[in-house]
Length: 340
Image (spheres, rainbow, N blue to C red):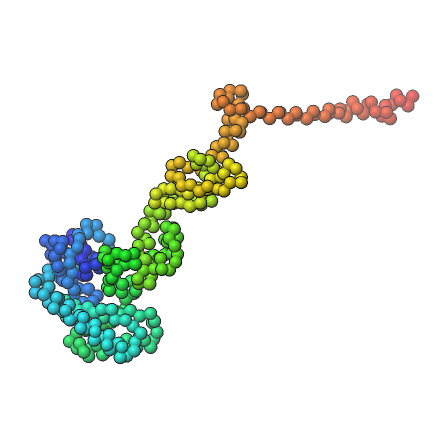
């Protein structure tokens, strides 16, 4: 039976699943060495997966071994050289006049692979050629290491750079606790009644804020139990129209109908439990005033007025049938005695 563990390679990074069958006594918090698409990496064991989902490839990659103290020291020594590699790559990119931004660089734990993280807005063919030229130049500088260029999105750039969030938190959500980015749409802002001004819904990365999805499901569930705008409702102070709703506190803003037509309408907030839909009450009132149509024969005991039974339609009187034999004898001209 396979034992699957979740492993993370950065402090706030995505969790990947690996097979820990070669190491049966593995514990959460230990560091292990695994083979990834970006070379051999040291990762931290985060959690045990009791019922894992089968991957598309059909099997999980195995964990090679536990990371020793020498492996951790070796990784730390290569991490200290990452800043220097980033500065050199930025300088060479400026010489080539590339419209790209070198965000950071990352060494594998044994220094066998060096990856540069970059962001760009254009994906033109001539720019791709220049990226190849940049990679070749960096490969000459770091000849003992395999150099790679990896393009990342604006959200990943904001996650790596960190900084204060647009809401005022000392750290952005993406660099503080978000391990994966969820798809965000403008519909989420509309459901929560948030202003659609770009500065209000756009994060530091230039994309829609990740926090728009935090309370989206709660707003959708709450709105299903509240009346919609412009609906007629009956409040303790009279009939009115729904002006606005506040899903998080189950409150509704109602425009009350004034008793005097010359007075201005009054807006007042009510809790959801104090309001009743006007159309349902109107339907019940009409049903209560309608005559009873469920009882027949005068046995109605529901207290409602019995609906009068329709008067029977009179049956048509059948026409008398003529006897042709007797009728022919009585006709004049057919009687032989009439000639005499």
